[in-house]
Length: 304
Image (cartoon, rainbow, N blue to C red; front, side, top):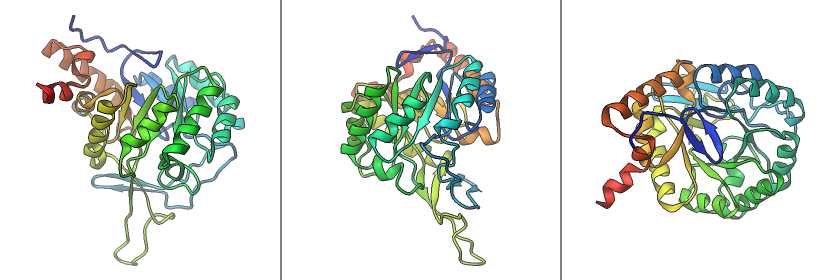
């Protein structure tokens, strides 16, 4: 029966609503993750954590644009050894805490997951577009993505999500590789490679020269990727990219997303999670729909 209830089961996790804080946004400390849980997020994802401390790229690392943000942080993190306490604090928020993990090879992913036991799930970052030796470097190779996913699944009983890059010819090929490796879900998408140049000096603005574009400009790209993955895979797809309203969340779910992650929109509005869930609940009630009714609806409409 249609219902405006927003609670979902996602890869075995119980979420009060389908909104999730995306990786890299207020996810460096346990306190900030706990705060986002208090602001209404159904789950939170940490900053990507590696095996060794990294300072990241030199400034400038982030640039606000009319259409979103360019960032080239370079995966700064304290290493998994120094993140254990933060993970414990984050769990006090009362919502699932997903640890984002990055590495250069399967054994490194496995080592980090073992070192951060106790997370609700693990999100494999094989998609960061601006970190040398990591992210997209491994995430564009379907064989390596399958091996990394398999290694993660053999290391933990917790759900394993794989975050995919749009900077490939065919994201479905990479999604299928993750699925073969045993992924419980895929997350689409990470940022799109982009660049900005100072017209007064002629120098690229970001310290790393180029970075990843996020925000409203990438939402149509994300919607298309989610649509294609939902059609091809038998595992849940989690949509992320440019979501800043309940309408955006509905669109992403109609493309096939079981849940949505929110990142850049938090920059201007920490109330974004409660605003999305309030609007989504009202929309479902007004249209006598449930979340199941709208998930993948665009595919059913096309098939009619």
